[in-house]
Length: 319
Image (cartoon, rainbow, N blue to C red; front, side, top):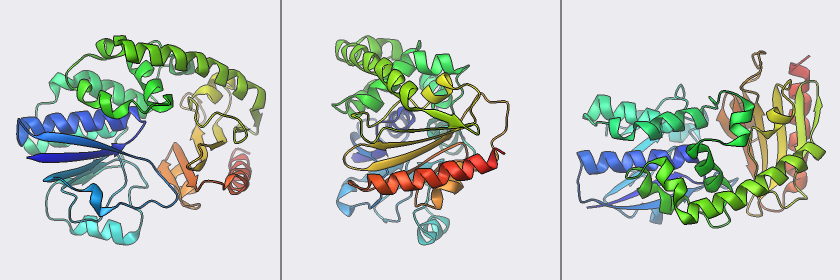
C-alpha cells in the first residue's frame, strides 16, 4: 500500500503532523505502508492539482481543505481552513469519518494525536516529545520572547532549519521525527551545520529588523521587501519591542510577496482584533492571534499598500 502525506511546508507543526500521521498509518493501517511526502505553501493562486493525489491513501495535514475525492484523510486547525464556502460545504457532507477540523487547537500535531487516539485507538505516547513541542511552537507558548528568539531547545533549533534553510530540509527530516529524539536529530552533522549558519544569519536579521522596525500605537511595522530576507523569526519584533501588541511586516520571497500580521504572546493587553478575520478581508487567513496574506511574485507594492491599511486599522484598535 502507498500513501502520500501533504503537509504545511517549512513549518515545525506541519512536519510533526506529517510524522505523527505517518506513525498512525503504520500502527493502524499497514506496518509496511510506503509513504511519500509533499510540502505545500500558502499562495495567492492556491490550487490543488489532482496529480498530487497519486496514492492509495492521500492525506493533507496542517493545511487548507481540498474537495478532491482522492483525498482520503484531512486534519487542520487554522481558522481559515476553507478556500470557499463550497469547500466547507463539501467537508460538512463528508461521510468518510477521516476528515477533521478544530480551530481551537494550538497545533495540528496535538489535534491529530487526540483524534487518532480517541477514534482509532492509536497510542501517541512514543511521540509525546513531538506533540509537546509542536504545541509550544505553533501555539506560541514560549516562556518569553528571549526563549523564542535565542533558541536554547532542540525543537527551536530545528524550527529555524525548517523555516530558513536554502535547501528545504523538511521532507528528509520528517521520517526521522518518529524514530529519533530531537536532540539526536539536531546533532546530525547536516542539521548542526545548517543551524550554525542559519543562527548567524538570524542574529544579523535581528539587527536588520532593529534598524527598520518602528513601533507606534503599540503596532510594530517593518518592510523587508528590498532586502534578501524572505522570512524571519516572528518573535523578533516582541524581543525588540516588548511593549508592542501587534506586528505587521512585508517580505518578498520571489515566488510570492507576503504580509505577515501577528500579536505579542506576552502582552498583558488582550488583542482586540481577530487577525485571521482581518487577513481574510485581503484573501489571506490564519489564526486569531497570527495571520498572513500571500500575493503573487512582483506584487510588492500591493503588499505594501495592504500592510499600510492593516497598520492603520490595528493602530485605531489600539487607541
